[in-house]
Each structure stands twice: as C-alpha cells, then as structure tokens.
Length: 266
Ligand SMILES: [Cu+2]
Image 1 (tube, helix red, strand yellow):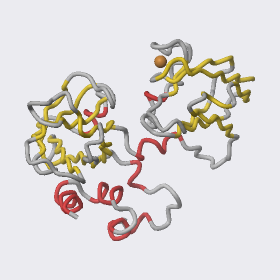
Image 2: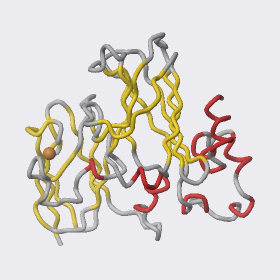
Image 3: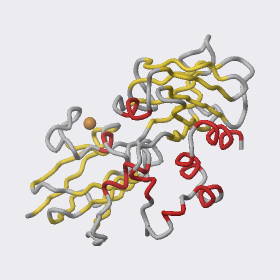
C-alpha cells in the first residue's frame, strides 16, 4: 500500500493502473476509454512509471521490487522495496549497466537500502531517457563491507506499453511454433516455419537464459533475433517472428553450447 500511495502522489494514473490493474485500475480508468476494446488510450502515452521485479540473489531471502516514477518534469524517483528479511545494515544499491545476474559498472548510485526500503531522486533524468540507456539493472548489495554479495537484482525492462507495439493490429492469428528448452537442450532442435510466422521459445531449465542468433557473442547473423534486445529479456517465454527467410542458427547466450536452428522458408 505504501508503494501505491507513493505512486498516486508522484506518478499519476498510468502507473497506478499498471501496478494495480485489478483493484485501483478501474477507478482511474478515464471515461473515454470505455468504448475502446482491448488496448487503452493510456498505452499510447509516454510511460512515466515502470516496475522492476527484483529477484532474490544468493538465497538472500530479499526479493522485492523497484518502482521508477517521474516526479516533476525531469526527476526520476527510484523506490526500492525488498520483502522478506530486512537487513539492519545499510545495503548499497545501484542502477548498473548490463543485466542480472552479473551487471556491469555502476551507472546511477541509489540511496542505501535500510530495513528493506530506499528512495532516490535522480535529477535531470526522465524515464524515457533512462530507457534509451538499456540494458540496465538494479542491484542491491549485501552491505558496504560485502559489496560483492548480491541480495537482489532486477533487469530494467520496457513496460507493457511498448510491448503492445509488437501485437498484430489486424487481430489476425499467426501461426506459432513452440520450442522447449530444458537441461538437455532445445526441443525440437530444428524447426521449419514460413516467413512471418512466430517461434515461441520456452525456458524450462529453471535457470536464466537468453536466446540469440549466432554467432556468439556478437549475434550478428540475425541481429534482431536476440532476446536480450527485446521486451522479453529476462522472461521465460520469448516469442520471435521471423521476417527473414534463411537458416538461422541460435544459442542460449548464457550457455552458448546449447544450440538450435530455425529454418524460415519463403
Ligand atoms: Cu551469445
């Protein structure tokens, strides 16, 4: 409830709807949306709020979430809330370059997390500007003395508002082919589809994975075919629509010996 209250103060109706679709969303839904089926007007607006799921690292018991919300005209407020065991020692937190679980250099320092929560105002930064700097991840460290131990990490991903741009405006159902990825590898290892069709990669390894076009690590054979660069980054399901005919080898970027092939015919 604290987060919701902060959002109402700082973020406006968009964030509240996204955060709390079930309950608060209805009250905040503008009346003019009533006759718009499916996609609401809000989704075409510039997002001013974004949620980031913070996944527990190293069995810390401290998963949680961060909310990024624009306040005023050019300040980005980052609110971190960790559930579970709050730590009594200050826990350094940063927005890092790169992605979980091993993000790179610090891009924006955040206020230390104390008793599971912190709030930081980053001046002269809008959410839109931040999203131009992806990939970024929010990382919380165990303590100043033990910076190398991570307790929570979350990739900053574009929100649903952007994801809807990939949906088919005509409403036509396109054919989807499923590839399951488990400890043994991709199955089926080779699939053949027609140009314009979609492959759904489902990660059932229980580990992080990121599907990418060969060759590792540059992924230049089909640069767009790279989960890391899409809204599905960090998700267990990655859908990709192949618009280029050819034989496209791919791999799990986080475990590059796992490979498969998608053959796309005209
Ligand atoms: Cu790779």
